[in-house]
Length: 397
Image (spheres, rainbow, N blue to C red):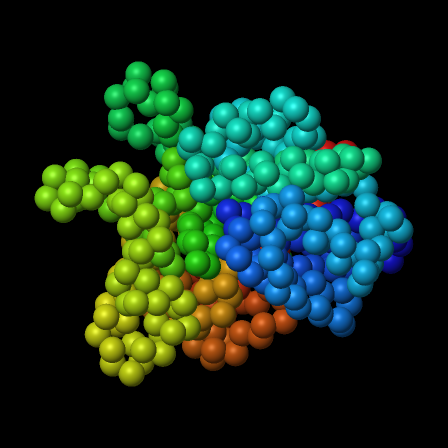
């Protein structure tokens, strides 16, 4: 592999920075790391280059300090960025609004637009932007590219993107379905099409991690998705409610005396699996449910019920189903969730091979878990958002 043509991918979160240095053509990762708990006293730092992993605990006040630590680690441990042939830095940005339907080269105007969109992604766009500004200052000699989570869903059919909200209010405040996890949904759906050798597929992608989302994709184009104006809507998640009656908000204000800030925290950080079963880790929930713990059992039941509900709805939206893909941490690693999510869907043409489902290898490969003769092909497809961001960044430059 040539050292030329690498891309540094940066995913700057509210209190973390995830990064990878990789070759977007071969997919080979030269280095990867994570800086966690920025601004929380003692931050945790992990940097892996080749077979060597370095871990540190140190005080990191903000994202500028965090990125300086990242560059320092590249200098000390490698690979040396000056000799790595970096041709671009790709940045994950959650909200691109109506303006951005594709990745873009970042300039001051793009930064301003990302900032302007912060009210519809208050937990994500500000830290994304902080990472961009610091990275552009510290790495000024290479182009920086923004890759938007919402881009894949930019052209949703109007009926799918529109809420039945007063039109003037919706237009004035840019309220519509934007979706999220679009980079993952695009990557996985493209992998499914390539694997099955068909471009005309009607497929459902289930991105199941701590954040969860579903998409319906026809012929490579997204026609619906579960996340909405924000990443709160849709499936049950690690700490988020997913779908909930909007009037619950009014009820909590009037009867529980909660403020908007408290309800925001409740819906986004204290609900989902954590709110129902006490833990946001599906592995713990499954273990407790197997032991007969009632709250964990209910959490798993609600989680799976919502999944099956969306699969049925999206099959109806598309007029049928050819393929269904599980991806992300839970989707790739939980045979229990996969089995239970597909239970009772034989009427859609889904036939699961129990042995294949249990035998899924965690080796990064795409694996079919449907039975021979199943009308719907069911696959486990490891997502790779970093590779997708790198490839899109390279295409832009």
